Image (cartoon, rainbow, N blue to C red; front, side, top):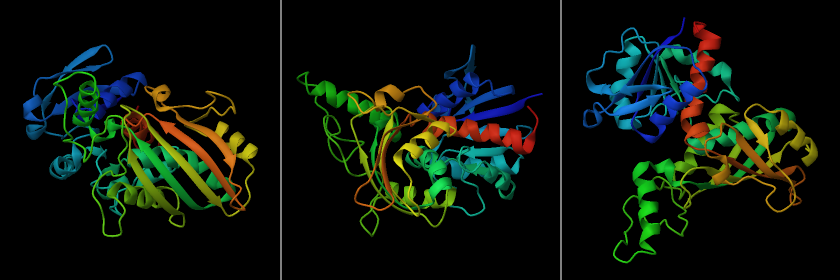
Length: 340
């Protein structure tokens, strides 16, 4: 016996990945429906060897459905998630709307799987920010061993994190560099993204940080440990898919780089590729389509008594969004619903 599953926002980048991953991981589905806005009504989506035609999110009745994976943005989620939850359907939401709600668990299954059990307060579980998700997967096993005091992270985030229009803008601007008459001014981004980097993701806040940087701080504390201090600089780079992060970690205890490497090799969701030679590390292009969070460049930080540096790369449409949502559904099934 399986589940009746809803994917809301099925025509978007993340929604399509959700359908792909549900099929790839053979999630126990008895029935599945793809929902979209009326402008995308009837659009065909793939689910394994099946083709689904999208139905209207606005008129859909969630009664009798078990789990709904939402990838529709905060504004639409505010309207439809409470409706689904009230109808008895558990919502796993990819937007930022509920991440900071104390009554809604924020879950990365490799890090805090037990948190799913708190879903019942609102019948909603939140998926974290893409940059946070991959980072805490790498931090968790190290924190268990030596207790992390402080994290300094610089991100190199792909344009797919900003949606299809952002990917189109990178493509069009790149073409415009070589094809006369096809130049394109920035629209989705504040500055040219092709052959450039932009140290600005989301809105600026009063203290000079951006909302994306603030998310990494608050979400790491909620998921991993409220005592950890985090400072982040988030940068958009001209890469289509795959987020990268340079992470500096200060521990309470000394942790040797060799032991850290061994710990990470055994950690769930982590794949270590760390050879001190040309090409002995993972780049965003190589992580696309993979489930893993890749860790490379593990080394001691000589400026700290108890410091390490590492490089972390992951497919942001997968681990940063769709995969994590499906893993939450799997965890929910294994720990709470026990139906599949």
